[in-house]
Image (cartoon, rainbow, N blue to C red; front, side, top):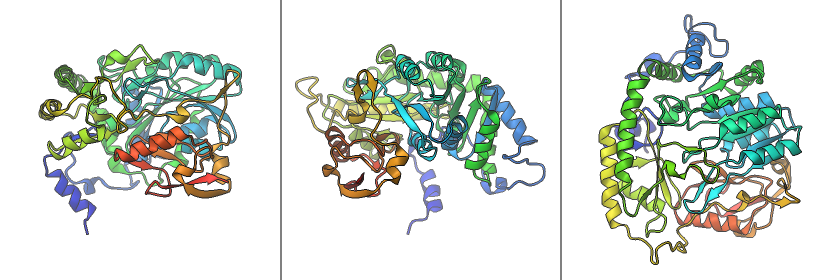
Length: 486
């Protein structure tokens, strides 16, 4: 039987390069023996749930560094910040607006709070098979039609680096006296260099949640919640953080956050200048690839994409005889490059200030070699191959009657509490789902409990299975059966 600790130690001695989170990339940590730092709330080391000393000072410093009015450490990941933000800005049974391409943690908050939801659907591009930006005008229409809505939740950037126009959305939300929460889990590095987009705090969002561990040098599960302006009931935020966070917060994780903030405060210019030089050089060389396409900032300006995060290396093989999963596996097995994720036609490599010149050099060398072996489909542009064009269908196209978006037949909490029966997945078409279905990563639901399962969705799921992608959410790990509402 394998033991996790031994396997991690063994893996750490191999030559696999991490183009995935966490952002410290295993080379910016100075902690050699974590057991020496693993304490509890003893004298002189404060208490995260009642900060008065060293932790309070560290969080205040984080607020200055990130440019918020108030910042709190999250040692249960961005998830705990999202749950706390939702609970602090709503009451049971309220109606909110949420981006349909939200992470599953937002849906869990909606479920726990028994909220009703109007979804803001991202524009999408079949050209690059990505969910794109959120249209601010659609949010304005929903807030105008439903003036009782007090909270709007948007994800920006997305897993793939798509940034919506948060400044415009914030202006609209505030005009309607509502609160804007931005899931900026993948944008903790924003605002530290002009090469990257501004943070949502700079754009006017009220609550911003960031996963420090994703793109900054912090331990996995380390995150931050930032509060700005006077619209947020801050005691309520603190109340729910006390409920959802562990009562035994890890001092190792908090120490990692403190070390990360110290690094940003004193060395960010040097670190980010070096990082941008390496990243920009890689992008220029990757632009010469013939069959592998690098997604660039040129996609901004269409499909409501306001900006693009160049830290995300999104490589598309659409229109070729290779799938995203095959590219991912080739990089892993042949070149020992561990990427973040694979989708139908593309892969994602995550980068950070922790990356090295050696890592980028290995990556571009591998891509050039693979690029020579890939062949375009004939005729050019033919994407009829069923293993390609995994374009997210179904509930990305909302039901509209008389210019009004029709919500799902049931709320998430209603579907969860309803009587259910189990059916084979292919027999669930036109039935109401009693479970989530999502690809992981990134954890964005294809189907949410209470929504109708369409034929397009079943086709999409089968294509994902054929491509060897990880489908989760169902009780049936084999993805053959699903619980539907009776």
